[in-house]
Each structure stands twice: as C-alpha cells, then as structure tokens.
Length: 101
Image 1 (tube, rainbow, N blue to C red):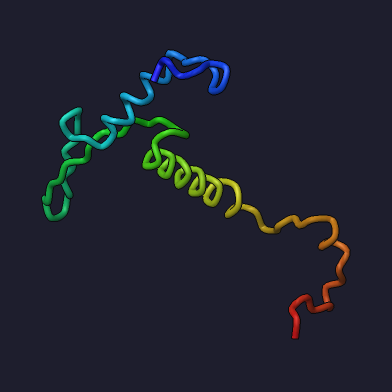
Image 2 (cartoon, rainbow, N blue to C red):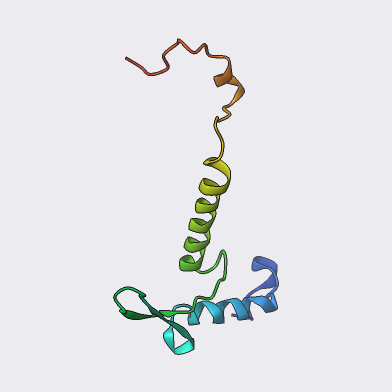
C-alpha cells in the first residue's frame, strides 16, 4: 500500500500502519481480554479489548457515538426545563396548531 501515488491519494502517514494494525486486532481475544463475572448469578464471559480507533473502526466508532448520545441526553438535555427552537418557530402564537388536519 505504501507505493500508492502520493499525487492522487496524498502521502502515506506513519500513523496509518499503526491504526490498521490496531483495527485488525480489535475484538480478538488472542490480543487481550477481560473476564467479567456477574455478582448475582456468578456467570462469567470474556470481553475482548477494542482498538479505540475513532473514525476507522466501525465497531469502536459506534460505541463512541453511543457514549456521546448518552452524555448529551443525561448531562445536557435532561436538566433543561425548556428547549430553544429556530427563530421562525419562536414567532408562532401558542394557540395556533402546526399539525396538518
């Protein structure tokens, strides 16, 4: 891959090799795992380590997105007692129905 034309695709950055190697090892228990045990029923399972490569690994990007959504909901949106809308929506009188009937 390193002999790809730099004019067309840009130069090969050294971090690219590292990110691809982490991605290939992502979720593989041969490269490390944690043993998780339920405190109530004592069931155990293995959880393979992830690569934590944002933007390249689809699985890790999904978890980062879910973490962001949870943060936004619990820390930013839930404590608010009101919501702001676009300026056009703020000028509509309260007694006017927006839904088509």
